[in-house]
Image (cartoon, rainbow, N blue to C red; front, side, top):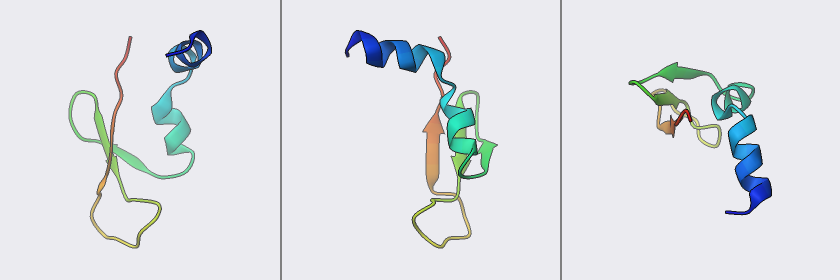
Length: 53
């Protein structure tokens, strides 16, 4: 991974970025789930693992 990409990864909270587009709910210690923004659905199929460093 490039230095730039690593720097961005360390500075950005991906959960906050994605929550700007879809509603996420906590689904474990580091996991979040939400409705996929590309499909009409009623149960969450979009998942995110936020690794805190």
